[in-house]
Each structure stands twice: as C-alpha cells, then as structure tokens.
Image 1 (tube, protein in one colour):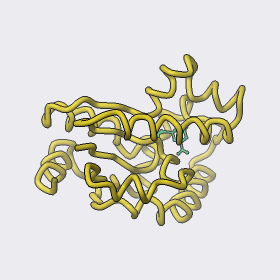
Image 2: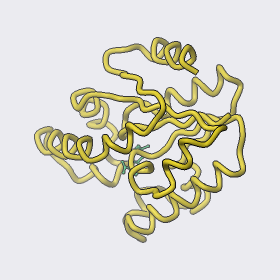
Image 3: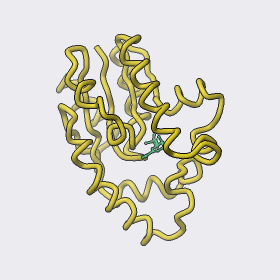
Length: 172
Ligand code: S3P
C-alpha cells in the first residue's frame, strides 16, 4: 500500500508522515527530499536556477517513478504536487493507493509558515502577515479542488500530532 499525504505547505505532511510510517512499519518518502537528492540541489535552488515550470515537470516525473516502483510507503507530496499533475486522479484512484488531505486553516498555516519561509521559494519573499494571509487564502481557494481529490480529509487545527495520527490509523 502507498499512503499519500496531501496538503498545503506547513500542514504537517512530513512530520505526521514520518511518525505514521514508523507506526505502520513502512518507509517514509518526502517528495521534496527525494527531488533534492536526485537533482543534488535544494528545491529553492531548483526554483531559482531552473524555474518553477522545470520544477513542476520533474516533480511529476519523480512522483510517477516512486508510485510505480515502491510499495509499503508513506509518501508526503509537496503542497503544489496535486495541482500540477495531470495524472493525479489516476494515481489517487489506484488500487494500492490511499490518500489523505491534511487540512489546516489559514491561521494555523501562517503561524507555522512564518518561521519556515526561507526554504519555501513561493513565500520566501513575503514580508507581512497581511500579504501572507492573502497569498495563502487565494492559494487554498484555487487548490482546494485538487486537495479534495484525496479519499480522506483530516482536519489538523488545534489537534496534537498523536490525535491526528490515531485518527488516520483508525481510518486506514
Ligand atoms: C510548494 C510546496 C513545497 C515545495 C515547493 C512548492 C507548493 O513543498 O514542493 O516549494 O507549490 O506549495 P512543501 O509543501 O513540503 O513545503
């Protein structure tokens, strides 16, 4: 089985994914880390030197590679992965795939993102909370349709990691 975690930047995909994988005795793969290893470059450098279009192309290619070659993994996608991949519905509906959207409010995302902006090229340049709020709000509106393709939606606001994990394990 491949458990795919979907959600906005800083929604907790990697943290939760890592713990879940351990509990399930699965391997954990973070798509951004996988890309960085393969390209031998940080995601922010890929954006800077090669551009977002190139990033989206390789992101889809590496996702395809992982899905076709791996089994028994928890896979955390990048925040934009489901929105720029024309095969996402096929991937999410495959028999060996289960998917969860880790949903978080704008407020939760801002609180978390504020401290982690530098490694995220899409928000690194945003200086005020006001602009960040507007940016995330617009993004969530546009991306909701893709995130909601996941077979389960778990709200993460004001929940301890252990509670989210128990909820996920119960639903699997
Ligand atoms: C992106 C999210 C990032 C990374 C890239 C683009 C996005 O991943 O893939 O910076 O478009 O939302 P995380 O969600 O792991 O931060």
